[in-house]
Image 1 (cartoon, rainbow, N blue to C red):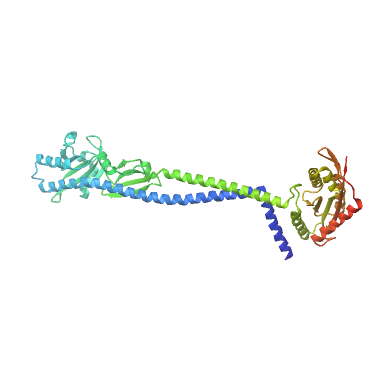
Image 2 (cartoon, one colour):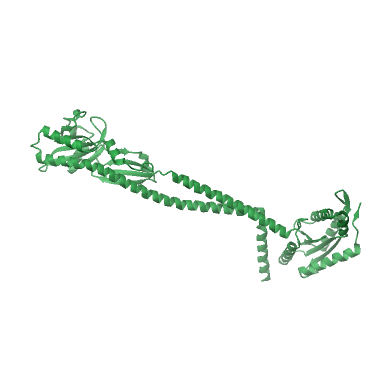
Length: 463
């Protein structure tokens, strides 16, 4: 249980120490950055899905309105043609050419989008209005017009009205054609063909539509006949997965409407949200770096001596406990505590001032660090005292270290033009051979340092 507690404590300590490193700060900043960016992209994903659904609904509503408008305009022509068919079914033998031309003229004048109306008695075109520009149609037999005969034949066979087109017209241009077969006493009598002016139909059907927010195309697909094709817009729109496609069945096929929302402002909004998210992610990550650096600096100030940059007494105590726990787990060489005291340091302060005294403390700290291993701890204990933690060591190694420390620290050095020699007193103790706790270890090492100071006290000499 004691070993487990020690392992947990060491693990927590290691985590704490790693959290103070520069690498940890940058790693945490990257984590925050990617988390913020991921949150931004997730929000955008759901917002995009919601906006796509809204655009699809709006596009479907637009397509439905477009279909209703087109149907309304086509039906207005169909109803007029139905009236003529009813008239001919009753008066087919009593109507002379002048009377029928007047009927056609009245229907043409009243109807919208009608380019011309042609009547074929049997299969041959006999009447047409207006005649101006359409004279060449009179006398043509539908059976001799390959481009138009399939739709005529289908209307007769199905005994129903057929809308076909766009069809290339004999008199030039193109149009949509209502084919209405006329039956008298259940026998085919003739064919009424009402040609619809496509630009006029488009102007009426598309007037007032929100063409800035929606792009649309209309395609006619016929089961039989030579008609069919694009009535409006680009065929590429039908292949766009973001477009809404709506079909309207006809007797001779179907009309297909494709609508796509073209609200480009949403892209600007999405990029604005994305840009803001990335900026906030960057600011958040930078804030993490700043906060962790400040935390590390505060921790350093709390655990290190500001003059010598050595661990202070608080941090030393923590490191000593860690060293003793590591010894208990590993069973390697003993742990030594080494106290160092500067003899007659007060005389240096009194004679040369505290600035020179501070330089002396810094120089001694530097020389001590140069003589110990990288993993050893050098701490400023108090005033002119230092204490070392040496792990996995031996009495022989400590004796050699003490000798090197005397030689190195007591070498003369220059401070602001003043040559100084500092003499030291050293005391060492070992765990667990000489002390069973950290407190007893420090007490014994400190006592031996003072014994050495009493026996071999030397004065700091100036030259």
